[in-house]
Length: 254
Picture 1 (cartoon, rainbow, N blue to C red):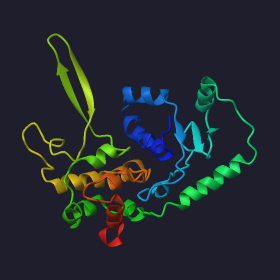
Picture 2 (picture 1 turned 180 degrees about the vertical axis):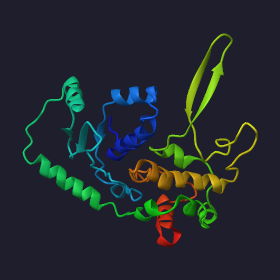
Picture 3 (picture 1 turned 135 degrees about the vertical axis):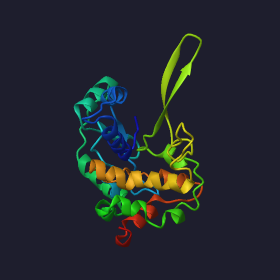
Picture 4 (picture 1 turned 60 degrees about the vertical axis):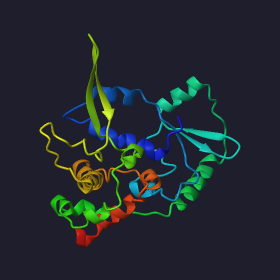
């Protein structure tokens, strides 16, 4: 209830990893299929928002069952799917005659999208060679301010890294899947003690190569980002994924 439209797209991107022809994660799929998404449009996106560059936006209806819009004195809902219709009936919401509502929604959508000044381009990243970007000389400079705190990953709606741990009692035990971060030094550490990403800048490179290149090449769904801008707003070192994307997208870098 109240999920932003671009976060609904993020769930779709997660599904690409957890529901594949080769492997289907029963825990994720069961929850995903049972989910009804009642979205809340964002009338005034923040300055870090660049969701329109990522194929979604503050009023995107694509992955929602119902879209709620703050129209001033009330919230007006738009039912988009049979799931949304069933939810509205269960909640006792009564359909209302609303002449001109579609036009009002369209006007509010255009106004919200016009407030998004940030634009990114990742067309050249798609064309670039993986090894070329991986070996590019700019990674240490880009990662210079990063303190590997993992704030960006835990604020990101498309990050899916996890760890598996066993918690045991005297006669019982449970296996847990826990959200983790590829920015943590222990995440890539081997049982042998070897760590292929022992340096912070290497973990930084892995995170952004995954979001901007590996995912793009594997799934052909654009970058692994919906442009919410949370990582930009929350990063204590003021690292900006838009600038990193722009650096990788430069033709000379490709």
